[in-house]
Image (cartoon, rainbow, N blue to C red; front, side):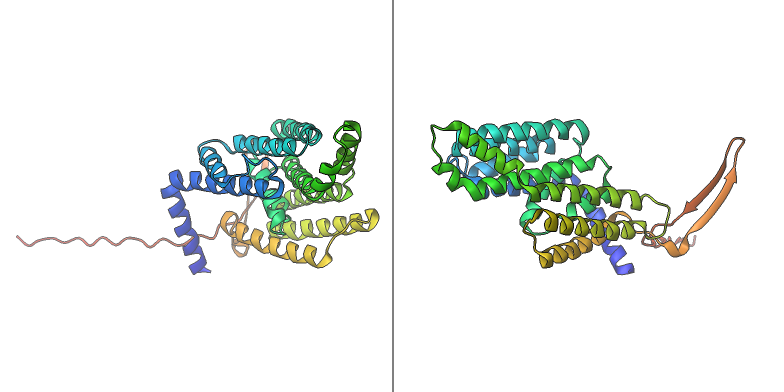
Length: 309
């Protein structure tokens, strides 16, 4: 354990010293991956579906707040959908504007969640985001998690149905609108996933806030159980296609990733818990103090050398 704690402290020191470089590079990398994923899935506009353009936009994004990167991603999605068809562009723009209204109203500080969630869907571990949001954020992060989930399913829908949409009669705009809207809003798997992820965020948040030993771990396990149950019940009730093996494996991997996150963010020693009681003129105070696991710093020994006169 001491070796891991020393490694954690070294990583923290590296970050604190190089934060001015590490933060922009991290934003550049996240932005680049997001732009490339959008182009890879719905790259219908040839001029925009270019690696160099993605790199340039990512460089710009590294100097901007992540909220603006989210806006750029939304603009890219709208442009690609417009290239597919005018109707797709209008429906996509309406959905994105609606999501932005909720996102900027309730959880504008969780832009990383919106960007990371579709990426984690591609990696088959989307469950790590709602668990991590419950550990590190507030209940309002439900909005960001929902926006990221909807964004993924919308992009996936247009990717899978692009050929069908392209073959629809261009003159019958009403039929094309109806096909697109019914396809997006009729995605039962999307709504089940949003509900499951929202429940995971809330359960993890509520339990990790309790004054109990190993609250973070208990919150993670309970959140995973709630998520699995809701997804399985929803899959059975709405006849959605879900891989039970992939679900369980994804939850296990997500749990392990969040345990690593806990090691860096909430590493405490429950065996040395102390309970303190005191009072003032108005209140009695009952305090539970749990010490953090830290590396013991070696005391520097100063040797005093005196010269004989």
